[in-house]
Image 1 (cartoon, helix red, strand yellow):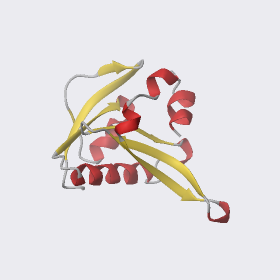
Image 2 (cartoon, one colour):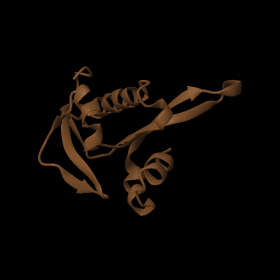
Image 3 (cartoon, one colour):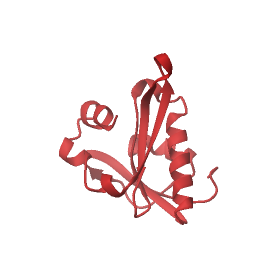
Length: 130
């Protein structure tokens, strides 16, 4: 999933995509039912021990279907269960509108991460409607 979106589609180097945080983060998957009751994964995201949400990715044909919102809602629920009062993320600037609709707000200036413009964003945890 992340390989398809970040490495193949966005051309992010593999060394920058997979890291040691993968071992300690909580990962969430979104899936659809496929043939013979099997499931196809269509999206993913992670919650890091620091309260950072990251690696949110949805396959192109499932963008706009609610998969990304479902992933984010689950990550916010997990953050609340773990006692976080606030979470943050580094959004690609092309996706800031998506995160704003979920209650995130810009925090600081735009910056470059792996050659892509990003914006740090924050959100209180608890009210899932933003």
